[in-house]
Each structure stands twice: as C-alpha cells, then as structure tokens.
Image (tube, rainbow, N blue to C red; front, side):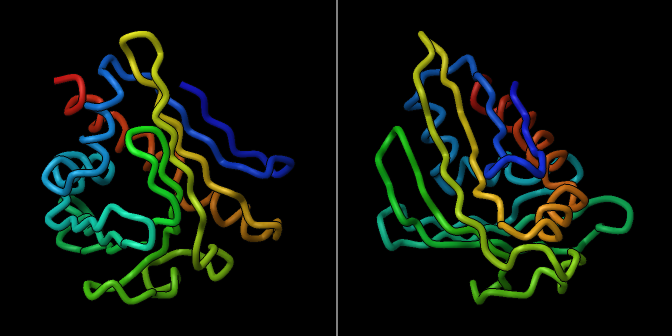
Length: 172
C-alpha cells in the first residue's frame, strides 16, 4: 500500500493491490449493490448508493454512522463522472451533498471552512498479474490551508478503513 499526502505534492494518492481481477474490482467499485457493502470506514453502513456510470452521469452515496458521536448520522456525497473508461479508469468530481444530491458546504458536515468544496478524483484499475492495483488520486488544492484541512479531516484514515472493507468484499 502506498499513501502520500504532503504539502509539496500536487496529489493525494492511496494505492492498494487486491487479489482479484480488474473486472471484479471494477464491479465492486461501480455497482450500487456492491458499493453498499463496503462504502465508508469501519463503524459506518452505506444504506444508499445510486450510480449513473457514464460521462456526464452522476453518483450519490450515503454513509451512516453506527457508533459514538456519529450513531444515526448520515453523510451524503456525490459528484459527476467526467470520464468513464471501463474497466480501467474513472475521473469524477466529489463533494458533500444532501439526500437530493444538492451540493453542501463541507462545514455542514463538521469539516473546516478551508476544506475544498469540490475535488477532482481519478481512480485507476490496473492489472498486476492476476491481481489489481487500485489507485485513488485526488488533485490537491493550491491553498496550503485547504491542504491542511484535508490532512486534518481524517480522509486518509477513512479511505484506508473503507479499503479494508472493500478488500473483504472484492477478495471474498
């Protein structure tokens, strides 16, 4: 696994190799019924996932807290697919939403006022023999305050926890 998030980089990258073929990893990543099995870090469920997997299409996901301060709290996110090259690459926007898919200020979900209101994300699905390397690449904002808000948000830990759950599904 490779994780990178430093102020001198232009990207935040998490890569992980899964013991599954590209087609299986792609399906687990893009099909709503599969997404609902793994989306969100440990301590969250994913009661809703909608995907219109085409250039210009959108997605809308909900993760629901099950423990502590987050118990019963819904976190909605969504965006638009800018590029869909199945089963190799996705480029999309990502932002917080409400249950209708309308863009929300990250502050309404407890993020810093400096947290980016929208991000561009590239997801790569690369064959590695009989395995697949999945890379999630966020373009970092130019503002150091926004980069620091991302660092402090728990995004890296959240993605790693989600990918632990993803691994159990895709390799199961």
